[in-house]
Image 1: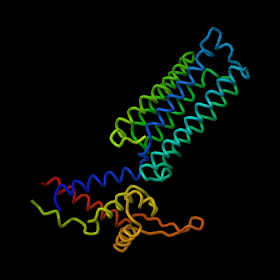
Image 2 (image 1 turned 90 degrees about the vertical axis):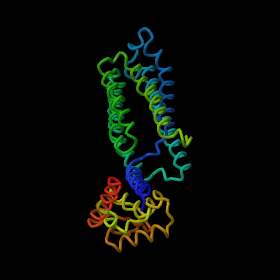
Image 3 (image 1 turned 45 degrees about the horizontal axis):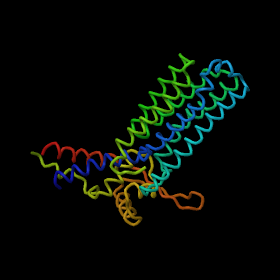
Length: 207
Length: 98
């Protein structure tokens, strides 16, 4: 046994311990595409909210309010479908099964705060607390990422902390809710998608 | 310099067995298929190594049925944990004393 063999063994052991517990095939494109959808949604919603008198038109059941809810739902659903698709493609290319134990663990830990946040945000909408919806989606999404961050790249945890901080800011300054929401779901997703790509995927060139 | 090579455990000499033990150290259970995929081994290869580790008393095998599919899963025994930790310590000591 020579020293380079032992070094190799030790680094292999470390790598296997990490790979068998963490979901490390997360595709940066899931974040980048989510960011693009969020910015597109913001572009449509912005004039509705920030035109003169726009925020006064946000009453329960008004057409503008329902349209905003529809945009938010479409952004969420397309982002979720895209995330599943690009991660599936990435896992397939690498010859792995996407739905393995670490992926399940990361998903379950992500889903619990997300489900609570979804129900809470819908409740805010039904009860007419529109000014707090941007804050609530950011806060619960941030908590979901912090929670899931223990089971995937550590960068996801940091992204979650940023989203959480922006959510609290949006609660304090509800007038700027949409802009802060666009910063979190749009710009931060683009930035972190870039970081994930740069750190983990650049060499392999996989999507 | 003390010769730490004698502290290395022969049962863990192959790359496959290091991999099996490493993943069982940090997971309560590993399925046969998950382990096969993680370590990029063939069925026969993995079965041989897990059998050897089972005979050494380092891992436990549980066979069950998920629906009608047979499912084999492995977990580490307390003896396996101790033995693998000692093996890791020996590897680290060798590296530090070079």
